[in-house]
Image 1 (tube, protein in one colour):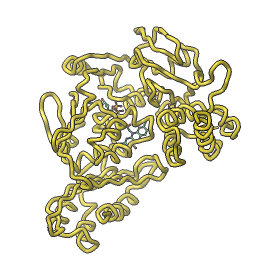
Image 2: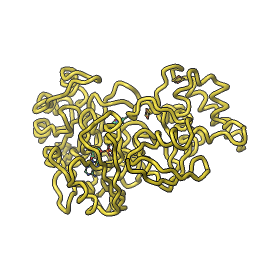
Image 3: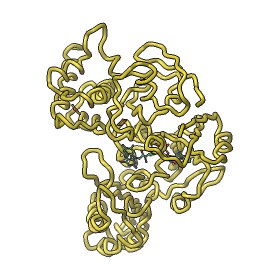
Image 4: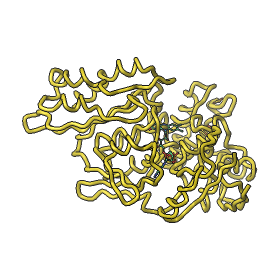
Length: 265
Length: 160
Ligand SMILES: Cc1cc2nc3c(=O)[nH]c(=O)nc-3n(C[C@H](O)[C@H](O)[C@H](O)COP(=O)(O)OP(=O)(O)OC[C@H]3O[C@@H](n4cnc5c(N)ncnc54)[C@H](O)[C@@H]3O)c2cc1C
Ligand code: FES
Ligand code: FES
């Protein structure tokens, strides 16, 4: 089926065009154009907005706002976002990163969505249609979402306060076996006061490891201190089986990699 | 199907084409602009054979819609040689047997050019990272990595 592209200079006009049936928003196109090339017949019109606000990055004080059209390469190269750059660099190879957007990553099905895993640990806010909702809530309801995400924002973690790991079979690039992001806050005594852990490839989309987060609080980041969290790391996960790994394998190695991530100093 | 006018520069010469709306840049370069140097391997973003530079950035032409390239500067392998003289990367690939069947070569060359344009003296690790989105089924990658490093050395030699 022929594909048509509609380009609008404003988000509002593009949003109005998306109300028609058979339309889909075009970010960088690494998934949308790929789907069209593959013969996906669920859409015949791609809609994009060229509003420069979509490709803006603002790091003001302790808060970062990244436009939905910002590419992984732009995130990785921005000096104000150095703390989280490794999560952007984890997405695909160089050409994919020059094209793949933050907005598109929010919609990527497993085994993709590595940057969104980071957004979960950062407790990011997703901005769309003048409103703002937590990324966790956004992900839960994304299948019914028909609008345009304009930006994501989050409090910048302190230097070294953001942990991220991606496990893949093909090095240096390769699809995830799983990815994990964590933001852990400790008191002066080294006891965890709060923790957020995002998991990729442990369900059909990125999810939080709520049970492990809870089990960390009050403990230290030592082998003994994290044992309880590792024991419940798989709670609530439904890992997929795909060409990269089986559900069983993902479940087996999750605690191993979570341990490495939490004990890394 | 609706035709859309698109203007871009291809290896320094101005092009104006009427393209099918929704056509990929790969289809337009090969089918309209007469440049068959970018190859269509997978049309899925996974092989890198269709890699080109758009405004100096490495991009996959199979996942890029031609209409989004209005006003852009596109560089392909067909534009590397100047006045019949091979680009240092091409010469290094030839000298180092970095091409066997040659299908991946145009994509490898563009990925390597994107690297050397920014990082003239790359480490081996930089090279491996730069071609990490490009698949080669023949060479085992080592000759390609060595050729890119050799081209970088030749460049810095000439500059000195
Ligand atoms: C070879 C290859 C390797 C890859 N490797 C990785 C990887 O390692 N890790 C990873 O996470 N991903 C990977 N991906 C997947 C993909 O590139 C990324 O997830 C990317 O971030 C998707 O963004 P995009 O802008 O290209 O999305 P698009 O293809 O433009 O869009 C994807 C979906 O999101 C919707 N969408 C996009 N932007 C918005 C918006 N602002 N508002 C509303 N809806 C929107 C689109 O309608 C579409 O349904 C890979 C893809 C390829 C082709
Ligand atoms: S044809 Fe574009 S990446 Fe394979
Ligand atoms: S030379 Fe044949 S694919 Fe690389």
